[in-house]
Image (cartoon, rainbow, N blue to C red):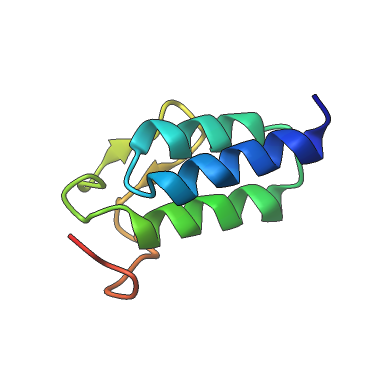
Length: 83
């Protein structure tokens, strides 16, 4: 499967279930070796989509090299918050 086809597959999965932590993790893991700005976009989108209780302070996202929800990392604010 080409990288473009794989990306479409991840996007379609997230359109069906935007609150799936596993879906976001799989997408981020698939993009680990890609350009850092693209990976950051995925993280930021996940923060906007996932309910706040899922991204509790200090929650490490599968060893992906960052801690989402930690002070200074919660980029989600109230925009897009649905929980």
